[in-house]
Length: 219
Image (cartoon, rainbow, N blue to C red):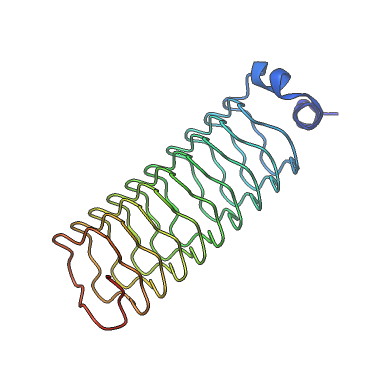
């Protein structure tokens, strides 16, 4: 058994307190099968997790700063309070992932599929989400200030109380999105689809490209 295989076996069988004691920063866990593993609180800073199977894994409060998660499978993984700042998530499967309070600031998520993801109070400031799919995702209270959401699909997405100040939403699909009490100040909604969107109590100061129509609810 190689050192890599031994490490993977250890991560799948040891308890949380034992995992926290392991030095996992810079570890090569590429293409590892860590499905269902409990990695909560693990230090995986700059680790190589490219192509890894992390379905239903528990990565809550894990340090994943600058980790390589490209093409990894995070279906239904739990990443509550995880720090993914500067991580590589290109091609990562994020459907149904739980990222409440996670730090994703400055991460490149262009074209990512985050359908039904839980991103409540997540930090996505300055994140590239252009062309991403966020259908029915929950972004309640999330920080999306300065984020690039151009041509993203936000239909039926919950953005209640979210901070979208200065965000780029050009060409975004916001059909029936919930933006109640959201901060949209200074964002760009040029060419955005706004049918049935709920803007009750939202801050629309200096919003660009918005046209108030009967299909927009601002009561």
